[in-house]
Amino acid sequence: MSRILVVDDEEPIRRLVHAYLTDEGFEVEELADGQAAVERIGRSPAIDLIVMDVRMPKLNGVDALREIRRTSDTYVIMLTAATEETDRLIGLSVGADDYVTKPFSPREVVARVKAVLRRSRGSAPVERSVLEFDGLTIDVDRHTVERDGAPMELTALQFQLLLALAESPKRVFARHQLIERVWGQDFFGEERIVDVHIGNLRKALRDDPSDPTIIGTVRGVGYRFVAEPLDR
Image 1 (cartoon, one colour):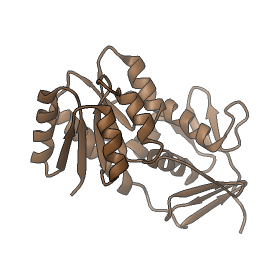
Image 2 (cartoon, helix red, strand yellow):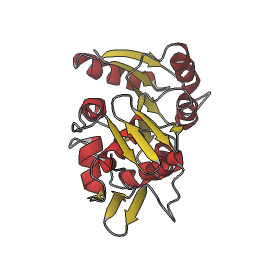
Image 3 (cartoon, one colour):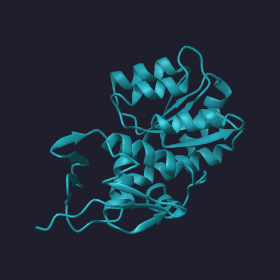
Image 4 (cartoon, helix red, strand yellow):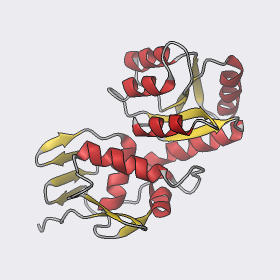
């Protein structure tokens, strides 16, 4: 049973989301502010996914997410006002996996939660447990990445995005194709989410977008994995 943490300063919203998620068989906890969420994850990270509002007292959702990402790659779905596009983009840039705009249907939240949780077991199988390229090693079983022998710190979503590209070197992926492979066919958001996460992935891998050695951009189309495979 997956455990979900719902973080929102508005009790009616918390209770509504709680009720719908519980009806779907999830175990749900509630908290009223971002600082409490950071402390909760710090004490015991046994949470599979966090649904967290952006606008909260004590510590807003973006800052709370930034703190959580220092120690945890738990999936996070942000709740944002429909007019606050900046909140959505900043949330994605610091590690949110998805977002839902207010006002929302609780069924949409449930659908997003299910779609995000499916990512961990939705990747296509690979023939080898370790993928090796010039300067880059991806251990599929251990979910680890090394660049020139140094470990790289990636979130779960960043790892899945990298793996989706690395499984098909040189193939050009359009944004919607990466969404289908990484986010799943149930994804509701905008395709530009891919650009934000590619940017985060490049930063994590120290891959210069102006002269990439790992992830290249094909203008007007999408992205491709450009690192050369090692012959073994």
